[in-house]
Image 1 (cartoon, rainbow, N blue to C red):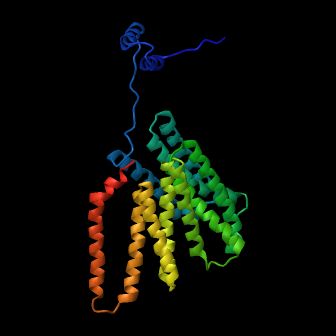
Image 2 (image 1 turned 120 degrees about the vertical axis):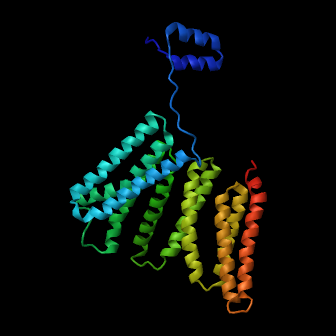
Image 3 (image 1 turned 60 degrees about the horizontal axis):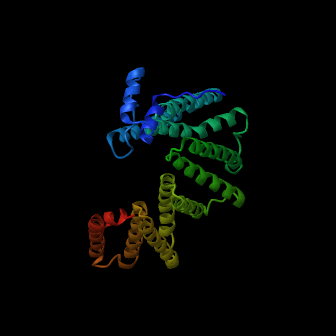
Length: 329
């Protein structure tokens, strides 16, 4: 039977469990000449200089790569494009694995793996070009099949990376790829017409918000936040565009109801993000209503001024009572 080996970390674990005393631990270290180098620890994530530097550097690297590709794409052959995309993923990904898994710099390594995941669709596209699976002279509708393969492959890779790394920010890539892939599938089924694009996009982003709420209920708040944020931003854009184009009073009431529900959800789950978007939607409705009803009236500027004043008052009330409310539980 193979003998088990132990090191100084086991001794320290036994000391914490009370199997040996602190004095015995120090005596063993002195007798055996054991030295423990304290592991380098990453600063706790939060709004601090280190975390800001992490995010700034990683997004700068991603945008720089995108800028390089956009400037030189036409001058590169398909093979060179594949080499650039694969090389970027391997270099950035290896650095991310080295930092996150070997040296316990979880945020720094996770951000680099986030960048590598964001480059994945480009790699899949270059592979499709090399294999001749990406038609050059096809119509936009015919290209949707190629876009579908690209979306599904990228989505599968992003989900696999999220499950492997457990880095929540990659959820943002998963949400974006799911959004685009579902749009592609729906438009393939419905035909080439794009008249209902805003409605379709609003429905999908609303579904991502519900997915985020479901993940929150299951205790996966770190991942849920990015799905909710992506969904809320997308829904704000598409739903507001539909609201401004619509002349239906019933649709306006639906718009108002959705954002009042968001405010209610913010109180139920103690999440400021729903309160922020709920307030934006509520004031969007009020402002549209004011313009439709009171525009041209002599006291129209006074009504707008009252709305502005109410925003300031609500901000004060939030500072006084809101933070206390959201800290409960």
